[in-house]
Length: 112
Image (cartoon, rainbow, N blue to C red; front, side, top):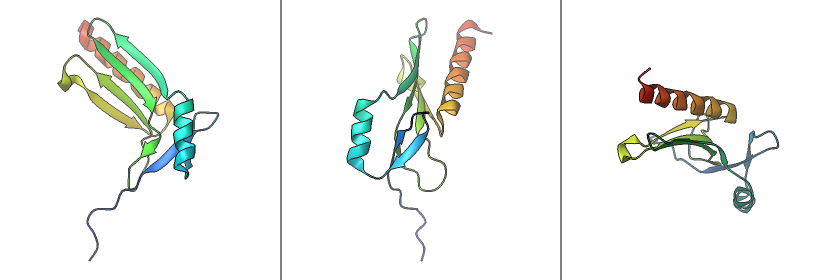
């Protein structure tokens, strides 16, 4: 009988010199890299609304199969229900996602 749920294991990544994820198999190497490098790529504060949009490198994937979403764009608002997170597999996709989210929030704030 096959298990219905695939066992998830953590996979660890660092970024190369072009900010592309590279899997590492040594936890201490990953931990050292994470402590010595900046993981936040963009932070946008929308003062009028109190919303902050942050895009950062997670460096950890807990997915079974499929593409690892190693970058996360997080929306943090004044209210807990305003908080959301969106994953992306590459920095380019994450930055595009960040910009789309900021523009959407700005349109909502201005009514356009």
